[in-house]
Image (tube, rainbow, N blue to C red; front, side):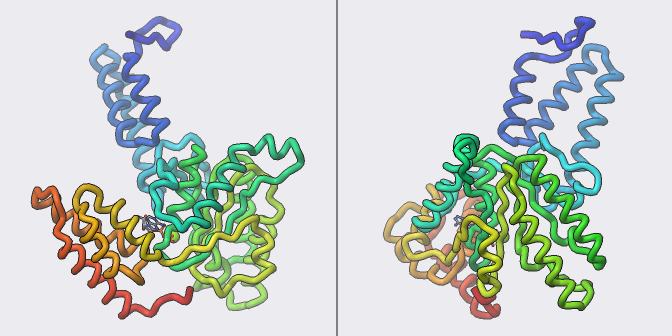
Length: 346
Ligand SMILES: Nc1ncnc2c1ncn2[C@@H]1O[C@H](COP(=O)(O)OP(=O)(O)O)[C@@H](O)[C@H]1O
Ligand SMILES: [Mg+2]
């Protein structure tokens, strides 16, 4: 099938290519999108449209390098539908995650809480038309490596909306007025483009090095952040995360619709995580139980990394299974690192 896209009847692209292009875009599969687009450019060249082919390639290269430059924290992002422009581009990095809550191991009450958020989001307009407020301002609290960042991505993936990671390092400058203005820009984006807006380690706002030492000023920035959250009436989902439980107080909590608390995985959760991460590489229930004991006290992230390392070894040696002892050693190494590192209070 050929598709005619231009008035003058020139044949521009093959229908299958167009479908592949749209599909890869919808799935957030950047690499595929790029390769199909390059094929289309090559097709144009073959048709004798050298100038057009060249322009297409230039456009793609420009898009690619711009994204690579701004992709910190969003390395697997899709070609953005909603690309922040101007100064905003340095404050927000956008991606279209494909992750789901089912990719995570979550304690039952936590999962139920997140599913409730999704359900209310899916009925956004219905709830609003009845004067009700769907939950959309979440505070995620808990130790590092338990899935807070992953949750923000999974919420965006489940809802099919972009994930905007707010770059606090770029937001906070030495100049109080400037930071406030940047914060305002971010919240304007929250209101104008629906997405999941993720403020990771948001309690760092106001405590950055290089900031004026004036305690009053620091508190004012954090307060203006909280006030903007409170005043926001958009359709976006605002997710703030912190590893520090001790910062929680009523004044903070009342700006959010939900407090979601993360914990190190229980034995059952460790078992589920090991099963998920080991997949077909290690199926023996007995081995998994033994490894579970070794992993108690580690975070989801530490367990994921230990298993990932073991699986990588197997793949590099063309093996289809992972020896349980290898995983055990890697878990023990993680335990040793954890013992040496002062654990952030959580
Ligand atoms: N609850 C979880 N279930 C499954 N994997 C997890 C979970 N929490 C963390 N991970 C793994 O660890 C990685 C880092 O977790 P992350 O979401 O960055 O933790 P946090 O933001 O709480 O520090 C994730 O990308 C994922 O591979
Ligand atoms: Mg995180």
